[in-house]
Image (tube, rainbow, N blue to C red; front, top):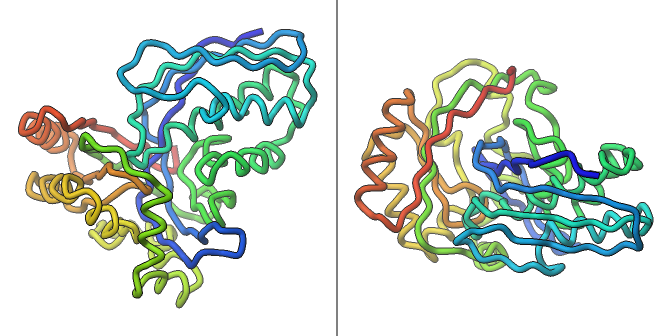
Length: 301
């Protein structure tokens, strides 16, 4: 059984606030997360069997493992452990989304494998069970069970659509710029925990300082809306990321920030033409930099 080729869309954190490390080792998070149309390609074949999982990697310049350390592979293994090993699963994955950039390409692969397997095996798990299983794979994975603009909290497993909060997220014209460097999420959080002035927003207010309901008023966006608590740590590790953030602002972005916990930065523009021009300008200045332009649909669509 197979239902064809799937696009595993990546994500972007429009804002990200990080609380103290919890007893379970994770951090309390608060973030507005949106999917972006940059995707790995994935197909899943299921047949009756004994629980064997195999992963085939398509042609790509992005090198990833093909064993259980790959989240697509691991997702299939954990799914079969939960629902029973009466199936064999073969996954073909072609990587398009850079790793270590903070776009959660690997988590997208894992989340999509769970969704596809659940559909192909007669939906033995409901959405809540899929999200719980996804959270065992990684903090970003639950988002990809039903990717849409959300308010994300907890360690990443608490997801509320912005529309349920009465929020209207307007279309955004984004340029994502990625330097030729892959950053470790664990290292970013480790360094963040060492900073003496961290955690203030979530500790003092109990939630992200930029709550998504602020977007419902139709106010003009300003840079603080797109604040990321991890940005300064990323800029300490990756000078290239800081340079790209500044280049986006110089190219006309009215806000620019880090997305997630990785090397990628994004700029927000008021027209698609200005976004295209900025991407061309930055990409031509450094051939090693990846630039992509996205139009992000509003939460009401």
